[in-house]
Length: 414
Ligand code: AMP
Ligand code: GLY
Image (cartoon, rainbow, N blue to C red):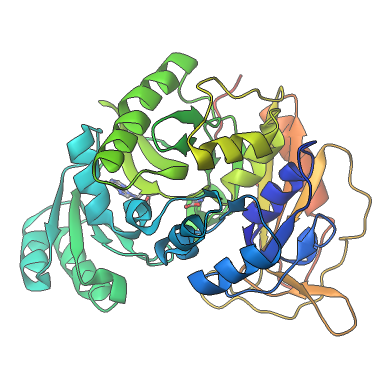
């Protein structure tokens, strides 16, 4: 497994429970994954370094967590070396790496999405933006969550075009119709042609309670988020996931990995805001707690093109995950702060997943990134799961700890 976030810790935690697992290697991993497998150092974005690692440890399945190695062609190189990979080749990972490419695929696949114009000339884009009303401005490339501006006026949109143009990712920009409605994340395990949906989840992107403050990578999530019923989810699988896989395959870029559709549930129905070519973070943390199926055979089947077309088996109830972030996150997170409370006994329905943590010279766990931990809990109801997660999260302390107390409070009451 490649990666070092709480998403990868959660995947490793789930894979470790598989009776089919022989050995688990995690590269580069984090202090939370130490007990789940063997930690190995690697530059995860360097295809030849990853191929060498896979060969040295006789890896039988590579699971790629983050998008950067996928966009860098790591999956291509490892597949070429004859080892199955859960994670798409670079050509298919472009659904995340280029928003213009994603739009082109959505149009070809008939996937409902916001109307968009793509500009390679930023002066033209700024003129078009200034002429419009509320509009969304997006950088084409990967921009670590900083590539989208939802503008309230033409002037603000034109300014956003200029600001995004200063990013390497913003040499091509998209102007998009502004949609309204609740957001929902729906992910599917895909084998190039078939898709098995994971339960729908909701992420909380803003830093502060009440959806205030700056955008982040995600401050918490819960699942299942019952904003669509089973029939609507099946419809989504048939009209979004499968046609997208078909169009990518026709273009010689079969998608084997996790396809993530970021949806807005508009008055006209669900529309896709974005695709990601990997599992979401922090969504995966709660999804792994809710998945009853053995994950390993499913990831392997996706990697080799033999996914069974059946529904995933789930645990009853709900899971809620609360992110503990470092002071200064998202702009300038402070590293090196000692974390207390990690050795506290956790109730059986609570799991603490590590992300930006490391050990100092004396072996103490300290902060080493923006999102430090995700504290997850299961419960019979959303609020029981949230209360349990929050209670435990508040017992884990470091200077300036940031967390949201309202994760999942907007969940439909059931
Ligand atoms: P993206 O990275 O494309 O998902 O965009 C990040 C966030 O911007 C989304 O989670 C939405 O909140 C918002 N957003 C993106 N596209 C649109 C749109 N067309 N209309 C309204 N909000 C949007
Ligand atoms: N939580 C949003 C993402 O993983 O892109």
